[in-house]
Amino acid sequence: MLYIIGIGLGNEKDISINGLESVRSCDVVYLENYTSKLMFKIEDLEKLTGKKIILADRELVESGEEILKNANEKNVALLVKGDVFSATTHTDLYLRAVKQGIKTRIIHNTSILTAIGDTGLSLYKFGKTASIPYHYRNVKTPIEIYENNKEMHTLFLLDLNPKENKYINYKEGLKYLLENSQGKISPNNKVVICAALGTEEQIIKYGKINELLDIEINVYPQCIIIPGKLHFMEEEVLELYKIQ
Image 1: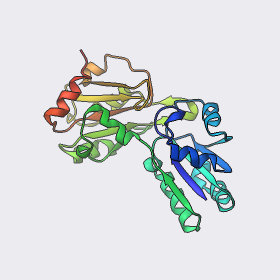
Image 2: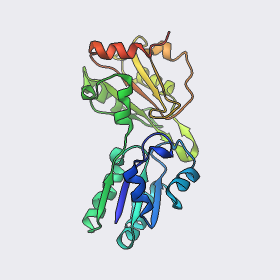
Image 3: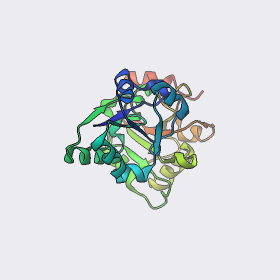
Image 4: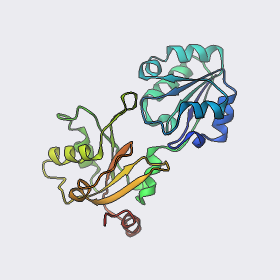
């Protein structure tokens, strides 16, 4: 059997009781460690679950062979930072397991796509999510998504490489947006910066781009939100995070 279990955004205790009990019933436990930054020590999760945890890099998860082979014979868990289907790799693994007749169970948790509700922006008013990759110089997709979202809120995820401890800083993301939007995004645009959402280190800042470029935020991962048309209640919550 294969369990694919979301473990949330914070520390090892964010795993649900359902998820914890499932992990404790497994023979083999993998932890995917390339789509987001872990906010805890692996040893702490091992102590909580009572299981030895195998770190699964991109190659191991995308190939899926080792995980699926074990799941054919044993109870196997794949632990995923955030929620299970935040990355398409996990969807592919799930499909392959089902097609191979492997009994599969999904256990959900919070993700960046729900944690952004802390900003006060309505989740119903977000358009398509965009990602700003490391090699972004000739990449136009994030700008196109922003334009197509029109009056809806746009979330920009910033690329990261936890294995090498590399993360795109929000300032790089803002500069990319200014340089590639052909004037549609200006230094006077108001945006929201989120860092380490769902953790004890969480930071949310709201203000004009030129104001946000003058401050420092050094916790990760980070993301950028350009709000669309605001409801008065959204405005009221954003004021709590406004740069003074």
